[in-house]
Length: 303
Length: 311
Ligand SMILES: Cc1ncc(C[n+]2csc(CCOP(=O)(O)OP(=O)(O)O)c2C)c(N)n1
Ligand code: SF4
Ligand code: SF4
Ligand code: SF4
Image (cartoon, rainbow over all chains, first blue to last red; front, side):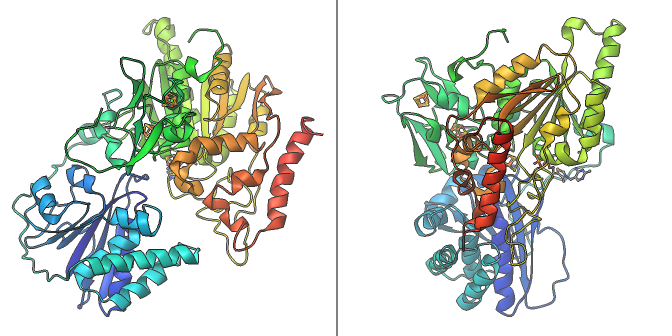
C-alpha cells in the first residue's frame, strides 16, 4: 500500500488534491481512500489531507502518520512546527516540494535526507491558470510519483473539478496545467522500509487532568509568535519616494501589522503580514507594489 | 478616548488592542472591524465570544487580545455577558474591586449566532437593559463551518446549503432578516450599523454609545473573501460598495429614533456589488437572471424610498 500525505495552506487545495489523486488511482484500477483533516482551518492556515492507494483491500483507517510520499504544497510549511510535513516519513520515502529551488538546494536548505523532487507549481498555476490554486497540479505531481496513468489522471480531474468549477475555460486550463506538471516530473520507483527516517522526533503527549490540559490562556497579545507571515504568496513593498504618509495603509490593514519607521514612513511587519494586499489596493498614490514571495530562508529584505 | 469626534483616518488612535498572528483569513473584513472596535473600546474590557470564526482568534496557548476573553456556545453569549456583568457589579459592591478597575462587557458574535441561535438570549438581555456592548460581525452565513445559509444570508446568494441548481437557479430564496429593526423594536439606548470601510463613522458611533448605560448594539457588514468569493485585496472595496449601492445603510438609533449617518450622494447600481462576488455569479452566467437582479435592486430602492431619502 502507498500512503501519501498532502500539506498545504487553506485555499491552496490540499483536500481537493488528495481527492483527485484518490479518484485517479481508482480509475486506474486501484483501491483508494482519501480524506482531509478538519481542524481550525482558515484560508492560509496549515491543512493536511491523506490518500491511501493499494491493489488489495484497504482495511486501515485514520490519519496517515507514517507516509511513503509527502507532498509539500507550500515550502514554508517545512519550517512550521505545527505542520511538520516530514514527520513520520518512512525511510526511502519521497518528498515533493513546491519551490523554485532545485532538489539539491532544497535538501541542503532544509536538511532533508530523503528523495526530494521539486517544481514551482505556484508559478505554473499563476502562468497557466491565472490564480495560485494548486489542487490539480499537486494531484498531478502525486499521481506521477505514485505511478498512476495519464488517462486516469485526466478523467479524475474532469470528474472532480467539474463538481467545483463551473467555467469550462477554467476547467480546461486546470487540466492543461496539471498535465504539464505530470510530464515535468520524472517517473520514480518508491521502495520504503517500515522504518521511519532517523531525523524524526515523535513527541508523545502524556495524559493530563483537565485542570492541567484545559485551555486557559494566561498570556496577553502573544499571537505574533505564530508568525502568520508565511501565509503570503505576494508581499507588499513600499516606495517611499511616492508615499505621502497619508496613513491609509496603516488604517486599512486588517492585521494591524503596518508600523511607522523613524521618519514616519509605513512598513509591514513581515513576520505577520498575511499578504492580503489591501494596503496596496487602498494606497491612493500606488506607492505599494506586489512582489512574488520567494520564501528566501534568509531574512534579508525583511525590514 | 477623548470626547472630540474623529474626522479622518489620520486621527484614528494609534493604540492597537489586538495583535496580528491570528488564524483569521487574509483580508477578513471582520478582523478589520474588530481592530477598529477595540481601538474604540480600549483595553479594559471583557469579550464574551459566541462560537464562530472569531473563537479561533485565540487558540491555546495564544491570544491576540490585551483584554480578557471568554468563549461561549453560539446561543448564549448575551447570557454569558450577564454573568460577567453581575460578577463585576457584585465585586465592586463588596469592595473587592475598585470601581476604577471596572470593565466594559462586550459580546462578539457572528450573524449565525446573532440573527438565529442567540436571538432570544439577545432579546432577553436587551429587555433586561443589560449594560453591555454587542458587536455582530455579519458575513451573511455560518462562516466558520463552511459558509452555510443563515438568517442573514441575502436573497440570491450561493451558500454551502443553498447552491444554485436547475430547480432553484437563484440560490437562496429567502430574504435577509432585518436584525436592526428587530433590535430597535426593543428601543435600546444605542444601536448602530457600521462598516469596516468607514472607520471614522464606526469610531464616532462607539464614542457616542459610551454615554449610555444599557445595551449598546452594533452590526457590522463584513466582507468574507472565501465565503463571498473574491480576492482578499478587494475586502475594503466591497465593504464600501455595499454602502455606496445602498444595500448596507449606515445608521444609528437612540432610544428607538433612527437616523442615517451617511447617505451616498449618488447610489451605485447593486449589480456593481453583486458582480464582484463568486456567490452571486450564477445571477450573471450562463445567463442573466433579470428577475432576480431586478428584485434585489427594487428591494434597495424601496428601503430608501420608505426612508424618504429617494424620490
Ligand atoms: C449550538 C451550536 N451549533 C453548532 C455549532 C458549530 N459551529 C461552530 S461555529 C459555527 C458557525 C458560526 O457562524 P456565525 O455565527 O455566522 O459566525 P462565523 O462563523 O461566520 O464567524 C457553527 C455552526 C456550535 N458551536 N454550537
Ligand atoms: S498585505 Fe498589507 S494590509 Fe495585508 S496584512 Fe500585509 S501589510 Fe497588512
Ligand atoms: S497609503 Fe500609500 S501614500 Fe498613504 S501612507 Fe501608505 S504607502 Fe504612503
Ligand atoms: S471565513 Fe470569512 S469571516 Fe471567517 S475568518 Fe475567514 S474571512 Fe473572516
